[in-house]
Amino acid sequence: MASDSASGRVVFFGGVLTIAPVACSVAEALPSIAFVQGTIDDQARAGGMVARFIDGDDGSRILHEVLHQTRGYRCDFGTVPENTCLPSQVPGFGSTFADPGCTQELLGLYGTRPALTARFSSTCGVEPEYYEVGAELTPTTVYTNVSGICESRPACSMAYFRVGARVMADGLPQAMTAREGVGTLQAMRRVDGDGAPLGFPHRFWNPAIDRECYPIEAPDGSYRCLASDSMGTTQSWAEPTCMVTQLAEVSSCAMPGSHIFEYGPICIPGVRAVGGIFARGALHGSMTVYNELSSCRSLDIGGRSGSFFAVGPSVAPATLPELQLIIE
Image 1 (cartoon, rainbow, N blue to C red):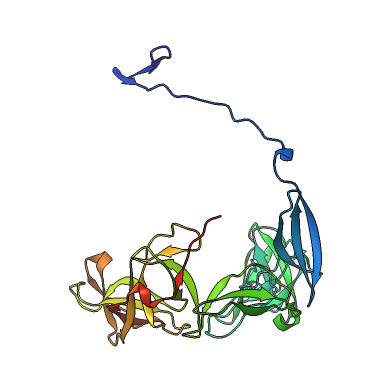
Image 2 (image 1 turned 30 degrees about the vertical axis):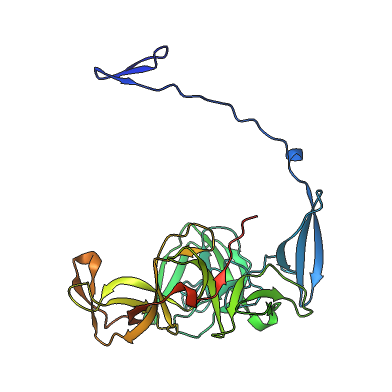
């Protein structure tokens, strides 16, 4: 291969490829002083939390985050149990031990020491149990409990920590959810025990159905608030033609909502465009469904824990509360 920079040609195995001229520019580094400067203002909140504000030198002010006052981690109020100040990432443990009797549980992970660890359950309605993270160990051998038998295996190249004392979730700082506004929709905002805000409004409440809802872009281009327990369509059908009755699925740990929606792209952060809104149809009583992605072959769902419902009649977007999208 040879190149001719003057003509912009590249000769490649006897062929000639002409390359159009490309305009280039050098990026110029901007000093930090070119941006709005800010200072941190920490304010104590009820229950052992700290609201961290940032004040800009242009007069702006934002609530940046809420911290656990003594542990220092950033509060994520959306984990389980909701409205509890917990870290956003809590690794689980439950299968690795430090001793041949499989009594001293270990947390093994790649990364740095987390704020807490947890024992998670696959049973519906059972909340995680949270624990302190104890001392870091460097074992060469660890143990696992296999069907009641404690077996040894070489330790992996990860960090191991002892599992410490249990931390009761109700002993951690708690937030409350306040509803703001009147009419067809109310904004939901987390506040502390004194009513001081702990963030921006994060969800909507539809008083007509006494249920949470989230913004969608409806098929007609309007913005609506769809109940948060709505189910999405699947590629499964009730009949072997994959043309008559499409199905939606709900997990065994969730209650089926009154609406079903057809998935669409997320073009605006936090707002999903849906291809259709439908009523929830009848429960699919058969243990067989047909999948359109596999040439409509039958699929035995007897071992699945969820339930399938028929996609019902189309629902007009105008029946849902309307929202206005404002970009500032």
